[in-house]
Amino acid sequence: MIKLFGIPFKNPIFIASGVFGFGLDFKEVSNKVGALFTKGITLKPRPGNPPPRIVETAAGLINWVGLENPGVDIFCRDILPKVKKLKCRVFVNVAGFSINDFEKIVEKLADRIDGLEINVSCPNVKEGGVLFGQDPKIAAQVTGAVRKRTRLPVIVKLTPNFCDPLLIGKACIDAGADGLSLINTVFGQAYNAHTGERIISGGLSGPAIKPFALFCVNRVSVLGVPVIGIGGIETVADVREFLSAGASAVAIGSALLRDPYLPIRIIRELKVVSNISKNEKL
Ligand SMILES: Cc1cc2nc3c(=O)[nH]c(=O)nc-3n(C[C@H](O)[C@H](O)[C@H](O)COP(=O)(O)O)c2cc1C
Image 1 (tube, rainbow, N blue to C red):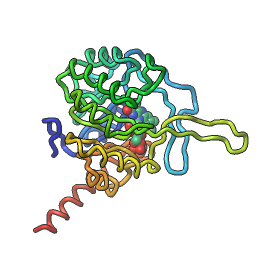
Image 2 (image 1 turned 135 degrees about the vertical axis):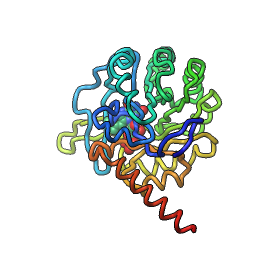
Image 3 (image 1 turned 90 degrees about the horizontal axis):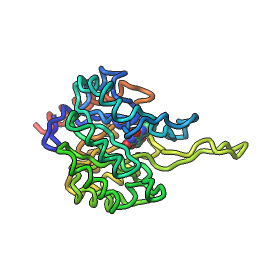
């Protein structure tokens, strides 16, 4: 058991946003993890982008899903009652295209969940598409606006793209964030080497980004709030690396597409490893 933001979690293995939907297809897995971060929820329903949406690369995936989701109203009416029956903490990943979007979504969610993960990797429409999370002032504005509207734990999910997570993370904490999660996907593209056509332009995830994610987690670990480490986690050894870098817990993403039962195996193996190290100390 671990305690973060004043609430207990049964273990430090969480499910990252986006790859497991709302955790309802594999309830037996969701029921075992410490927390589930839902797919990003927007104010209005979004159909997402046309295919190809996910392309495999040498050591990871590039996705361009486009935040497909039913929107906050349908989520609250049809999905949330089922999600609330899961035996894990539930954090809703909130995605907006304006500060007003974030405020409205948070108000509609009210206090029916365990916490919020604020996805600042979305483009800010008013600022010509610069991501909220690329500018410390704007990231702080989003965090402050959310903070005013909720008493739930607020985790800001940082983008690693063309900005320093330390500066952005500090601005968000100063504006009231309780914790940070990182990293979101890294900008990436793939081209057809024969025709020269672009196949996809989106976010890279998986083992390719793990060393960079460790660096980013370690960089923000000085800020003194709980950090959820994300990026290319596939094994217990990966989990231990993130904990060594300063994470309080970790979230598994892309690896679930290959093996949805991976969290159960990691939780079991982690227990064995920690029992061994306890015994070694005796
Ligand atoms: C298909 C897919 C969809 C994702 N959707 C979201 C999302 O809705 N919100 C979000 O904050 N992150 C989203 N992510 C990012 C992941 O939560 C995670 O931060 C990233 O993939 C790095 O972790 P990984 O290497 O374990 O996949 C998505 C990732 C993938 C691969």
